[in-house]
Structures are given as C-alpha cells and as structure tokens.
Length: 602
Image (tube, rainbow, N blue to C red; front, side, top):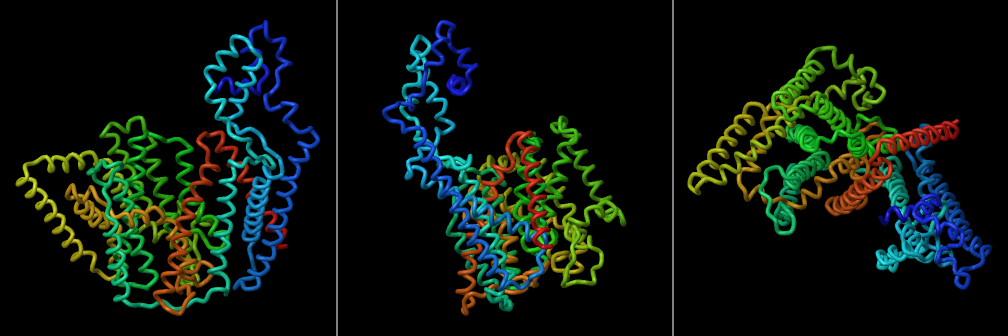
C-alpha cells in the first residue's frame, strides 16, 4: 500500500483514482508541506543555490582533467614504450573522464548543503512525502493514511544532493570507477615505466620452502570453525574449505613464480587442474541445485571472470592468452553451462544427467584428441585466443598456447561435474561412518585414509615424478587421481571438515586478481606479452622489499575484487532488458573511446 501511495505522489491520474469524486475538485489546491512560504527561499534564490554546486562540480572536474593530463605527460616521459595503440589511448581518455567525473560530483555533493542547496528528496522518501501531502487534503482517506504512516512520516531523511542527475547515494559506482582507473595507472607505472627498478630472481629452494612453512604456520594460527553464530558445519567441501584450498594453492603458485622454483612444476600443474576442477564442481552444483539458467546470472559470472583481465590487456597492450587462467575458466564455464542447460528439465533424471555428462566427455575427446578438430573449431577465434610469445618465436601457430594450456586440463572439469553429481552420495557415506560405533568408526576411517594414501603413493611413483615434458603427456588423463585423494583426506574426519584456515580462505577469494597482478605490480614482465621474469625492487633488502611490495600487491588485489563486484552490480542488472540496454551503452562507449584513440594516434 505504501508503494502505491508513493507512486501516487508523482502521478496525477493515480491521485484521481485514489480520491473520491467529491474531493477531486480540491486536487489543484493541495501543496507539498516543504513549500511553506515562511521557510522556503524565493525561486530565483533556490535556482542560484542549485547552480553553485554544479559550477563547483565542473570546476573540480576540469581541474582533475588538467592534473590528469600532466600526469600522463610525466608517465609518457618515463615510459619504456612510446608507440601506443589506439585502444590504449582510448582507455586512457576513459580513465581520465572517470576520475574527473568522480572528483567533480564528489565536490558538488560535498558543497551542496554548505552552499544552501538542499537537493531533492531521496527516492524512498518521495512516497512518504506524498503521504504527508495526502493527509493535508483532509477527509476520510487521508486520516487512514496519516494514522498508518505516522511513524514513517517522522523518519523522512534529509534531502539528497543531486549533481547532473547523479544522487549522492549513487556515488559508489563513480568512486569504484575512479579507484579502478587509479589502480590501472599504477599497474602501468610499475611495469611499463622506469620509475621502479627491476632485479633478478633469487633461486633458492631453502628460501622458497622456508617461506611456505612460515605461511603455513601463520595459517594454522587462523584456524576457525565453519558455520555462523556458533553453528558447526561438518558437511564436506563447504565454501570456506574450497576457498582455503584455492588460497594455499595460489600462494604456492605465486611463490613458484617469485623464486623461479621450477622443481615443483608438476605440482603447479596439479594446482591449476584443481582450479579447473572447481569450475566444473561449483558451476554444476549451482545449476543442478538452483536450476538458474537466467541471462543475468550467466553474465555476472562472465563479468567476474573477464572484466579485470580485459582492461589489463588493453592498458598493457597484452594479448588475452597471456592470462590464460581467465580464458580457461571462461571456456570451461561455458562447457558446464551448456551441459546443464541442454535438456535441463530432465536434470533430475539420473540417467539423462549421466548421459549429458558422457556426451560432454565425447565432445571433449573429439575436440582435443582427434587431430585437426581443435584448430578447425577455434580458428575463427584466433584474434582473441591467439598468442604471440616474444620469448618463443619458434611457435608460429598462434593457437599453440591455447591448445597447450586448455588441453592440459581438458578432462578434469568433467570430473568436477561428476563429483558434484555424486556429492549427495559422498555426504551420506561420510555421515554413515560418523554414525558407526566408535571402534568401528575408527577402523572405517583408518581404512579410508590408508586406501587414499596408498593410491596417492602409487600415483606419485608412477606419474608425478616424471620429468616435465613426459609428465605433461599424462597429466590430462591422470590429474583427477591426486584431486580425488586430496578430497578424501581433507574430509576424512568431522574435525577436519569443521575447520578451515581463514588466512588461506581470504586468499582464495582473490585468486583471479592475484594471478593477474603478479605480472605487473609484484614482479616485472619482460614487456609486451612478456612473462614476469624480474622482481619489483623498491628496497635493497630482499625480505623487506618483498614484504612491502607484497603488502601493496595483496591490498590492491582485494580492492580490485571489491571494485569488480560494485561495478558488476551496476553494469549487469538482474533483468534481461537492463542487460540489453547496458550492453548497447557499453558497446557505443567502447566504439567512441576507440574512435578517440584512433584520432589521437593519427
């Protein structure tokens, strides 16, 4: 009822419908309470008050643009590259406008109440003020409205400043865009200019494993119980546990790059396989349980995976496949989506569900294991998925990197779907063991742990200890074995399932951001499409330098993660029409900024 009256406050026809005929003649005589002649300023003065914050906004934005221009000139003077692409120039203009728009509106909103401009009612308060208006017109209906909404009337918020159509409550998106622009500038400053020195990597297994042990010790100090408000959760593979898994793998992954610890290459391959397994497991679980195949959900996932990497590629003039993890997760997410979506009305039928997983396996075999099929399918996408590695010019096939990277894990995402499908059974088996008498329960757990260790030992001896190139040949077909062993061991007891290390869980939430930013603000790459072969050097002491640079690295990774979510909620609304409108706007804006870049380059 409140919502209906709120709409009535701004729609005369609705007011006519709400008011009895005997009262419609007095419709023109009602007035808003705020329009009290004794308290309201003259109309000309009010216009002047509204104009001043807007003028301040324009002045502040102009000043920000001028400062941004001088900053770009300075960055250009120390840049290692001077031949910028049209896309780089266009996105630089976009960053400047985002910063200027935020600063201008921020100043305007800040000065509005101080310059006497009260703004306009907030969208939520508009309805409440309409109710107050109705009560003043008198009559039976008004008395009912007044009685029902007396408390709401007293809680009306102060007017909300609006600068060029942007409310103060809508500043969050502008702030996020401006902060993101500043972060992208910092990324370029670190890896494409001579401002920060670069140094060689320190190859030391002792330092590498010592650091891993130290981080594990700290992680153990952050042990927490899964669940909320004292509730203990003993279900396997709960969210905190999988985030923990991602977190400790990611830390070893980036340490592997930082110390050039090539001896653990095979382990890193398994970590990446585990990430892809989670893509299959997590997405299949969502679609199987929620049955949500809507466009908004899918587009939000694509935004999460590709928003940041897209801007990094444009800003740094790198190809998409340099950050192959994003491409792989995107591709296999599509694979899970289509597997679940086709015939989704029959997903509750076990036979149909297993048949679809088997069909996905067949398509994967055809795509990767039948010569010629992969290149025939992906040739049209070479502009996006092609890669030209300056460190390996001998690879003349631009799709070589995509075939190699995705091919290493082309089956494990299917194993992830199978695990998600079998999860209820697995959960029941664990619960059945917990329900056994204590002696029998201990024997059952010992048998499960012993069997898992035996399988793991066999795998290590048979496959894992092979040299790098030999291991790569068997990895696509065997990586599921250690993953299954880890799942069994990590969830073998209720105590293990109920606890997680919060440090690693936190790191697991920002794996995409830490993966991308390690190239540019934690280490330094060899240049365009280059790998991070150098360390970022701020301080002469190795460990002190690593600590300071790492602190900035993790803070910015977390900020990019939060910014991605804020901008996603604005750019990808929860309705199809809104997604279409925003997609058109973003496409037009992209074309416009690229055209500006072409003009500047010319």
